[in-house]
Image (cartoon, rainbow, N blue to C red; front, side):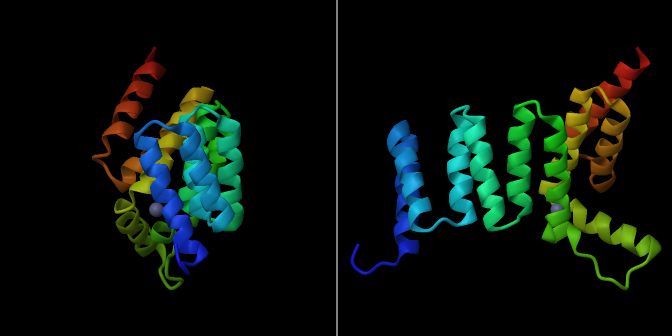
Length: 185
Ligand SMILES: [Zn+2]
C-alpha cells in the first residue's frame, strides 16, 4: 500500500468488505469493517458495521455501533438508522425519540432563517421538507411506532406531518387510511 494514509487504507477495507458481502463471506466482511474502524473510526465506519450487525439480526451490537457513530458525529442519518433498529426491537419510545432527533438534526429541513415569521415560516418548512425524503421517512416511522403502541391519535398526527410536506407520500396515505378505518370499528 506504499505510503497511503490510514484513510485510504480504511477505504480499501470498506471496498473489501463489500466484495466479501457479495460472496456471502460474513466473517471476512465483519473483519474488514472492524479493520476500517481501527484504522479510521469515522461515524460512517461505525454505521457500516452497525448495518452489518442489523442484517445479521444482532440488534444490540447494531445499537452499540450506531450509538458510537452518534458520539463521533451527531447526524440525522445515524438517528434515523438507530431509530429503525429500536423499532425492530419493539422499543417504540426510543425509536420515536430517535426519529424526532433526526428531524431536528436535518440540515435540510432544520435550518430556518431567523427573520422569517408566521406563514413564511410554514412555507419555508413545507418547501424544504418536501425535498427531504429522510424527514418524511422519520415522520412516517413515528406514525408507525405510535400505531404499534396503540396510540392512534398520535399516529395520525405524525402521518399528517408527513402528508403536509408531501401529499403524495403513498406509504403514509395508506397507513392513515388503515388507521382511520380501524378507528371506526
Ligand atoms: Zn429533513
